[in-house]
Amino acid sequence: MKTAFLFPGQGSQTPGMGSDLYLSYSRYRDAFDRCEAGANLDLKAACFKGEGMDESAAIQAAIYTHSLATQRLLESEGARADVFAGLSLGEYTALAASGVLEDGAGASLVRRRGAVMDGAVPPGTGGMLSVVGLTLEQVETVIAPFENVFVANHLSETQLTLGGLLGELGEAKAALEAAGARMAVMLAMKGPSHCPLLNTAAERFSVELAGETFGEPDGIVYSNVLGEPYPKKADYRRLLCAQMNTRVRWHDCIEHMLAHGVTRFVEIGPGGVLTKMLKRRVSREIALYSVQDEASFEAFLRAEKEGGA
Image 1: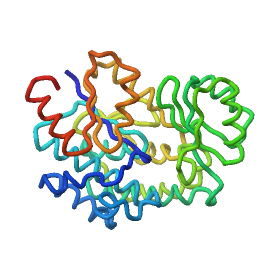
Image 2: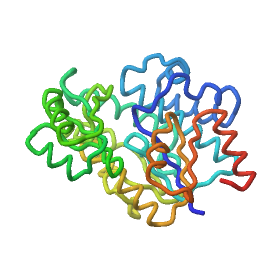
Image 3: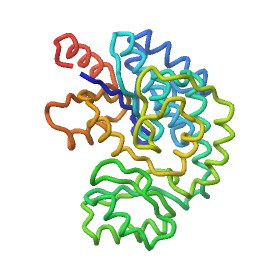
Image 4: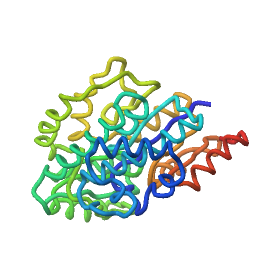
């Protein structure tokens, strides 16, 4: 059985995330505290009480920290993965989980990433639109007339998010609904991501990446930009910089994993969004788990002991 650990991105945060695990498990606490020190933020207040979670710097550091600390806890119980992948922000968690980034260094990096992203466009001018029910090709045809609307995340065969300027996103929303989209909803994001509107932000972020140290992964790690695994001796700086202003090819990542024998997916972190998308895609022969709190952690361990995981 080939196992993939998956890590969610921004927007998956939930109030109180990690509070029960922090109280109950020293391995979780140790990893959480390392990340909190690296981020230089009060992540206990952010994760456990929801304080300060109105800036991407805090949100991204909080999700990364909770997700990675949960993975470190699973690792301490013997859970191992062959493959690591994360959606957008989650790619950084995947890199840390596989050993490419140190825990605290990754927390610092995603905090700076969030700050750069929030400053990409003037406040109140950009956003994200979720579209369900149309294929990538159909969406691209509909949005072609709009200069400042782009596919930001290709999530599944018929689920995408668009990034753009708000005025044109509103017009695109109406056009997509007229074209048969089952749902087109603006997301609660401060600005766009993964599109050319972040070209200048990507240039700024390249300075942050220049000082980072990257190791070799213990397993296969997927690149959002490539839609497939990072190559050996990967240029992590170039690909992570490109991730900021180019499309996330999550659908391609999942299809590649399935085609290469992954039969168990364990989503680690808040929300369970990636598992919900997978349930609509895979057969019952594929095992799916979402580990995000004490109850789901203990349920996963029981499944492993019973031989069902």
